[in-house]
Image (cartoon, rainbow, N blue to C red; front, side, top):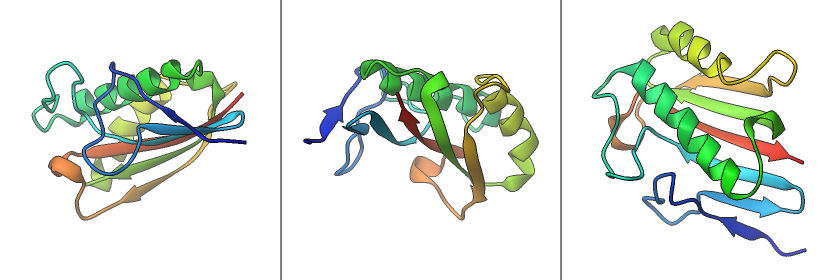
Length: 128
């Protein structure tokens, strides 16, 4: 079974040698999304972790949607944060995109630095 590259012009184009997502069978692996606005190529939020987190979630939705998936199909997320002190706010916003009925498994990890010095990056795996 061949893998399919997934691309959405509603999410930022990759800034390196990777795809926005790869679909393998009924599973889609979405690369880490940061708070870039696809239309402008600019970072959203100017350091505001809440604005960044919302933009990241919109980018994930756009990539998933390009393959016919939604957040309800997500089974696993990985959240990378620059400051774990922002966990509560990020968690609250992230949680607003999922219901308890289909909240995916996940981990949250504090890292020293993220691309373009953003505050948060999220990747996910979804299955139909």
